[in-house]
Image (cartoon, rainbow, N blue to C red; front, side):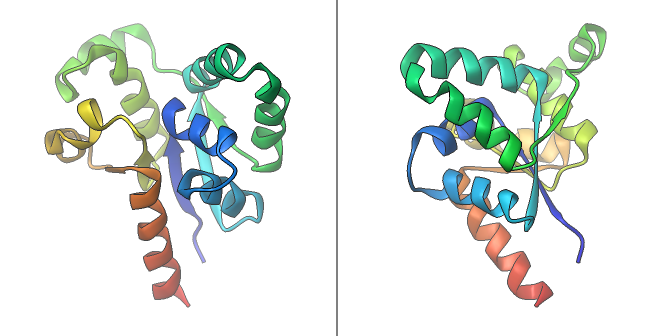
Length: 150
């Protein structure tokens, strides 16, 4: 069975680390058990650690442990020139590196809580060819895929 590949942005990863339950946490647990593969970029690692250190300093060690046990794959950030060449993909330029990293990683789904820039603009998914949704959306999609494979 081919592994389902998801890319988590920092909002989804933070949700999975800080929340004791919820779809983002379930995705981390499914990765831990080997049912799917999670990918993040170096930028996501840095953004997430900064945010957790600021908002929930006691959770930094949990964050680092979650990355290890979930076997999260960390990919390089795209080069600055590549980002400049792809500014047309999304209205918020700061999100281009996330899209490019997800595209390079050849994931099935980009998981985010950023509705304004990613989810509410269907053009982003159309231009990139990547499904984009919330952790709950992604979890529903994963469950459907797993049922079809069984």
